[in-house]
Image (cartoon, rainbow, N blue to C red; front, side):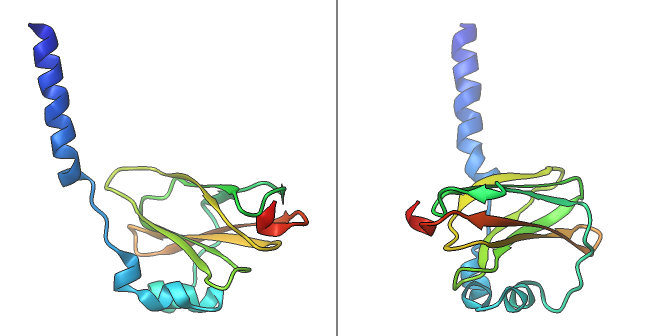
Length: 148
């Protein structure tokens, strides 16, 4: 009997998940940010004219990426955030991803990106305090770039 209750609660939790997890489509809401040709323009199209504080955001990626088609990136911060945006300065489109941060959740995202050549990955954290914070890491992409 206990097993049935457990399975029932599990199914109820799964059914409720879509109501809890929601995301807005930044590509539809701010399409110019995704097609911007410079990192500065992409940031401006996404957030307006801002001056991010260079502290509190850690961007981690390999110093040398052997495969530019699959560069592992981690963005972490202890700042209470509303959103996190990730940019790179070498590919034609500079904006890589935008994450909405649910209330009370930490900023701890891991993902893979593609870079054609050596450059810098930048993360901008939009704090709940109305301020913007920035972290960046420069890396080299080994010969072969995305073909790795």
